[in-house]
Length: 166
Image 1: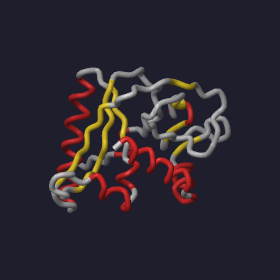
Image 2: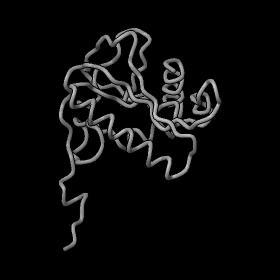
Image 3: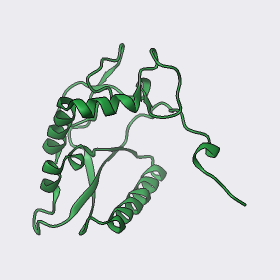
């Protein structure tokens, strides 16, 4: 799975449309005004110094000045969320399971990050199926572990995302 995540990250870097999309929802805080959406460059995290652990680089092809380097674990703990089908009901079930795992992980002081790269490419996603039965649809790959607290990022206000009618 680690190799597959790393290959998919390479696919993302080589794809001009993916790069443009990523630039749309990430922000260079030195060059752009503050916004409530997307990921600011100060929250991209450090570059991976070495090792085989795949790490999604939200900088994409751009360079972020003074970005630190860090070593990551050699054997990351991964969880995959899959269902037998691939219908909206299955997506909902996978999302509910993910929500529960994220809440429990947070309660236990774990850090989590999404490793969705191979799920995003149809030609790679099928490889994630159950190796015994060949069935199932993987909706999410989650990386869990203990790590440093990341910086806070901007959020929309509640009234921007929720409408309550009496």
